[in-house]
Image (cartoon, rainbow, N blue to C red; front, side, top):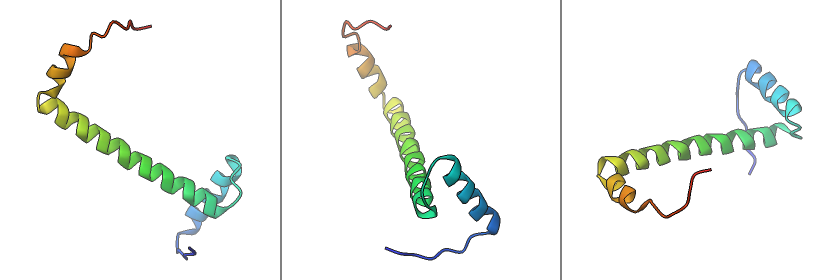
Length: 74
C-alpha cells in the first residue's frame, strides 16, 4: 500500500541520516523499522502491565512456591 505523509523537513533529514547510518535502503524501509520499534515499545508496556496485574493478584506468591526447579543461577 502506498501512502503520502507530511512531516517537517528536520524529520525527513533525520530519517535519511538514520537510514544511511544503519544501512537501510529507503525511507520506506526506515519508516517500517520505526513502526516495528513502536510496536515493540507498545508490547513492552503490555508485558509490564500484565506483570504488575499478576503480582497484584497474588499470583507471584503461587509461582514463587514452585520456582525451585533445581536449576542453578550461573
